[in-house]
Amino acid sequence: MGTSWLLTRRLGYQRTFELFAGGRHISGAEAAELGLANAVLPHEELLGAAREWCERIEELPWHVATMMKPLLRQAADLSWEQAIAMEELAEPQCFTTAAHRKAVAELLASAR
Image (cartoon, rainbow, N blue to C red; front, side, top):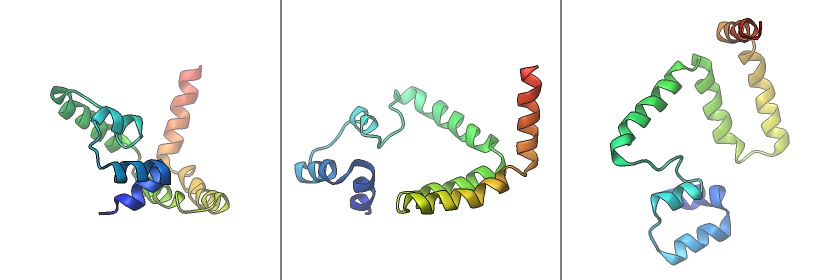
């Protein structure tokens, strides 16, 4: 469900047609090469890597995922001008948070 929409946006028409018409299974390594998977890990490392990823997301300031996810989801279907306009609406909100002020202060302190 939805693979024709998703894959044509990720891989383009020709590559998607090749996968659909060929009817072959792809390996995890090939999925990663195509950009369909972020990483290929041995089974015993998977849970630890997933936990690390979740912890990283959890540490983000609350507004980051809240703004980032809809912007990125819509960007594929927007023109350049529309995408820039969406970012222009989001950026001022990001630069006025306590998390941003704290990050800037930490960066400046580490530069000294």
